[in-house]
Length: 525
Ligand code: GAP
Image 1 (cartoon, rainbow, N blue to C red):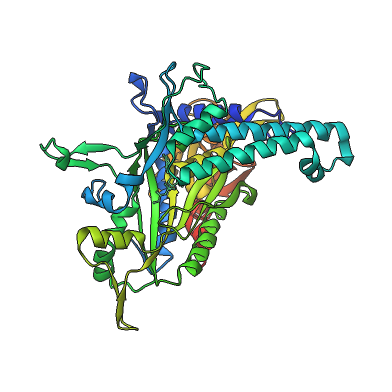
Image 2: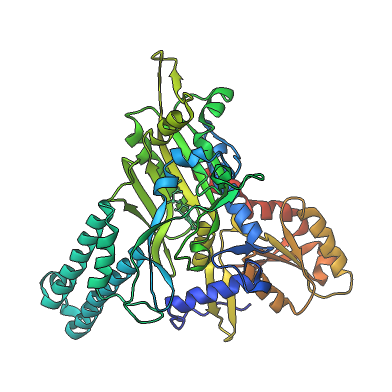
């Protein structure tokens, strides 16, 4: 049996690791650039034959955790197109925009806030370098905390970063775009392409895609591709509450596509122009929102923890500057190969959305409380996670390139077994002597419960490698002994262990290892 080398593997940079993940996911049919034969479409991706399975499994796990485990949460599937007034009421027409700036020489467009944030990050990077150098210089006696609070150069950098941040925050609060531009000028930020400081003014740019409905070409016919799925839930609040006889607190869950004309669209499927969200709006009694906000923070972290990813890969990030509709908000951040970034948002949205929809539609969106015999507009706690970001989190956490004891490399995806695209590979040792027929018999039993792959091409070692690379948790090998005693070997992806088991027991063994039920059972609330 080949085993993984326990020696420390040669370190590769985060950039290199991220590049490897992207090429791995293309090579094995997880994610392709959209319309690639025409050179692709920026920040739009297609999911391939394995990607679609992984994505479906993540969605299903989220969906079951929400709607099956909570008796008071139901799902809907609202249309992508909505009445255009929806987006007036939600604030997206007036306020869903990014501050943009163009470089006159390169003609490249940037998000002004990103240019400033990157500049501050560079200054902070200088601080880290100073600390690193000092740590080397002083060795075991180095006191990092003391150094960071007393070293004059570090303090100077810190002061600079804080000043820029404070100026920027104040400019954003006042919506002072001229000041945002002045910060870029004062910080001497250059265009990464032309290297020049020849900037235009800063303008606000709305991120919603618009199109025309029917044959009307004027303004009146303009509709939007939804930038979040949440509004489909808000406008259906009363439909669901009444027809489902829902009592507060209750939730409505939805998964589906959302569209944003992102300006800085980088980092593969992390930030796309067409993506999928999994959102849940939890309607609560006003005054009880903080209790439920805390509840959903813990519940969502528990869901993430049930995926078997190390806890230190996650952290909460509380929003300091709250959106105008929120009275509390945080992100669950994940450590992607390019650093800690937002994976999921948890927001206490008050009654902002329902109240505005009441006002714009002229229809009451209130809950009649039979206990107090009065009506009120509920408050809302929202949990909102990007399906594509969760996909990327799982992929980047599970991708490993291991050097085995015999010096060969194996690429493996240690995905949670219940989320893996293919659950079982059925492999006859050779293509003759009745082994393929026996293997087909096994396929015909397992395929009704699990996605299985049958493979008889190449050596068994190569076939194992192919399955490791796509994250298949189990390979079943049928050999000559199988014909004599109805046993097969089952090989485990993570430790490459092999055991001999009876064919009769296979369905139960596989089910036990790949069942989503087990993971769901850890999610008691
Ligand atoms: N309804 C609230 C809402 O949409 P958001 O923070 O703008 O909040 C929620 O988005 C989640 O959707 C994010 O945490 C992220 O996972 C995902 N998301 C947002 N923009 C995205 C994009 N351009 N590409 C991929 N995922 C995105």
